[in-house]
Image 1 (cartoon, rainbow, N blue to C red):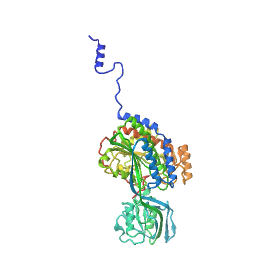
Image 2 (cartoon, rainbow, N blue to C red):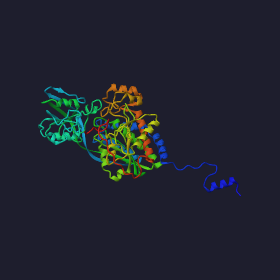
Image 3 (cartoon, rainbow, N blue to C red):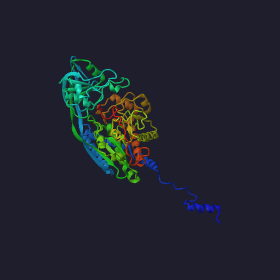
Image 4 (cartoon, helix red, strand yellow):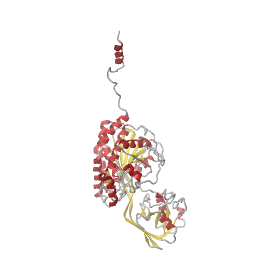
Length: 541
């Protein structure tokens, strides 16, 4: 007869258990594999590598009239650089060409009142050229078209051809912002015989709560128009609307035409093609400058992550395919990402599990902002699953001892086409601020200088390593606040943090998209919130 201990040993052997040793753990879960991959990838990416790419973008711009705008040799050479690096790393690289409307202001526009009182208005304070304005001189009597100066100033001014039924040919049309696109208003005015168009801000709501509807604004006409067109603040527009027989002159020096540009797409050979993890950044600058922060930082950061992810993907065999994108013509209205999404079949849309967007991640007077995927601000309509993406970024930044704030899905960067109605792909991303003004509360969280823009060189020639033309006094304050963290128009500390956060998210999601998407999901419908916001393409309405 077996003793009680011998019987226990025999039972253990029959059950396949080792006596006196711990049970062998099972294979790691997808989440555990993602965490391990995150540790390797965040250690591999290096802000020095990101700066190397950024300095290459700067040299490209320097050799091409100071710009990397889509439709210029500077952009094409930037795309060549990115594509060559990705091919060498082993990615499947495609270059997607498309035509787009190109606009450049060759020299500053002028605007003046000829009579009854000769007045010269100040460019950038009293008026701004609308993107895609025609080149030339327009002089004529100002005629207000269906404007509404009575609160709440609801306006359809210029939206219908009928608004111009009695418009005197040869005059300058004054139309009010509201309801329809600026391009509709300007083209309707030109068809009625206007020689030029002034679009003034709407003035709806209170100025204290709705300043962006009172102050001077930049606007995008969406494509070439036949007459010179400018924008002015509400106060100046209301003043012109309240006078008679006022003659003005608009002088513009612009280039507006159709050009060709491209998107650069790279994806891993392996991984599930029915649950693609996608990440993108726009590669183009504005024509006015090299775009080292906007959006060299997003492009260079994403490139560095992609290059360091490639060997990890070959060895670790992630579950999901990863696709990286560098978009063209974002500054013209997210045209590259829109072209890409428009070309997808419903099945291809469903195969994209999520999209991550990185636009301006090294602003000198930075904040650490995460797209509001859980809609905690109540201002948007992010697709289901976006909240889980927000949590990934916030968790990583918290692990680095950092705070984070929400930024709205306001439709003004390349996530817009992905979250649009009928597409509804879960989305997220990072942002460090553009022309918005830093508050005292944000200084308490992130340091820096209150009352100054997050990026004082936003959409200017000084957005580069040399900061050519920058306001020296402004940067003295920022350098005094951050010291050696400031390199050119960059905050290297913020850039380093954000690139690590990108690496963490890509690594984790390549193994596990629980709470975000599942293989073969049909993308839910979601409404894009559209409209204003702090950065990105110039608004069209």
